[in-house]
Image (cartoon, rainbow, N blue to C red; front, side, top):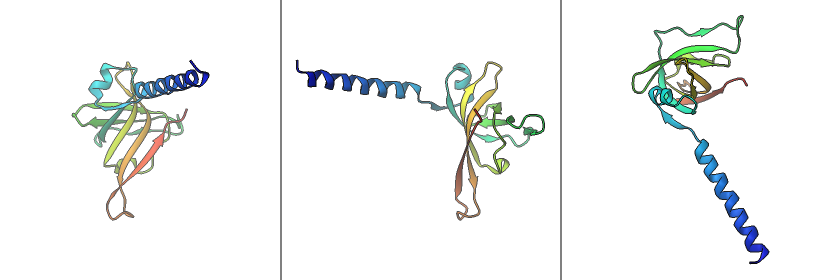
Length: 135
């Protein structure tokens, strides 16, 4: 077998390995129930802010902790811990996508927040904003 064939086979094998590892690490849309069943896996949870529940952000105590409650599309309400600053106009968001993992305590640990907000500048069309947690 020629050296060029061996190199081509090695490149193809590495490419297949990279593709499989990317697919295995990708997160999926889910509900809090599914995230609770697999606490170590990252999910995208879509829901709405529970406006009757408390939003806790006290920058004097901990500027990198924001807690709130979300109701997912199945109606389950969970407490969310976000290690970052409170996003601007958070209360006005129409829909929220949380990216993160369920913790053993039953709380959702969000690493990113995507907000679908109404915008006065886009003829009433929603605007998407993304916020990432502090590392």
